[in-house]
Figure 1 (cartoon, rainbow, N blue to C red):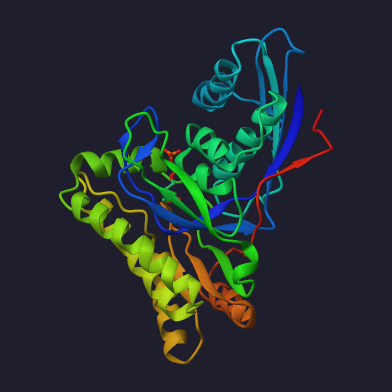
Figure 2 (cartoon, rainbow, N blue to C red):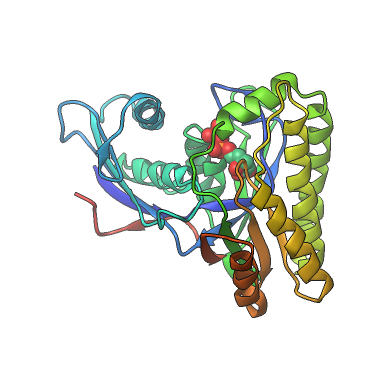
Length: 329
Ligand code: DP6
């Protein structure tokens, strides 16, 4: 009745931006990401040992929507097992440096899904765990497995065909590097969940985004198959620009870019002209994530720091979410 799982965050190379179903978290388009080590979140779930649900995240008792999102995932597991499990205790802890600039929710919900299923005695199935993680946060469905994962949008109204599949193991391209450049530590003003809804609802560019992003996924897979860093860098950059472009087209406009984000991007372009193979991607925030290879990660870090990055986190391809024998309580 008790299990613990560890999962890594991921960064999308083809972004997920916009839901066709808010409640089930079903996307308008497919997306593709790289799972990132070494950062991770560990989560322990135990059913039946407490009198009411308890949710603790990074040392504090979760409240409001944070708690509701966790309970939603636990409720699905409880109903799948016929309601015999009882109240749950859940404790989750991330080892993200405070300045990592990466959302821990993807790793957190992936670890929760894997741990909750194991604690309920359900078999270890990446597909079922991915669907469960998706109900907590869309991007979490891509953190159940390592390497490169593709979240297929699916067609069904119940979401049974909307989950992530692993396209390449972490070992396929071990030299690939992601360098997170923190240019601004402030909490973002508009969360991804609200920003994407606002974009879907008001941006006239949104349909073009959906069509383009869907078509980029198989291109990205083909590029990763032949390990072409330049082609992948170019694809990741244009996809990030197009996600931000569709948001800039919303009413009122949604701009996640800061002056120093653009400064870093400009400098990166100059360095590339001089021969450093480095590209960027950008989530719904001001901090670019640089894409390069092992031979150039030191140069990528130096480039970020030269542009005023207050912190830099170097990441390598990460593995699957795994069960652990040490529990958090
Ligand atoms: C820009 O997965 O955090 O990082 O499904 O509403 O929880 P919810 O959103 P979330 O959004 C991630 C958006 C993104 C792009 C990506 O990771 O694909």
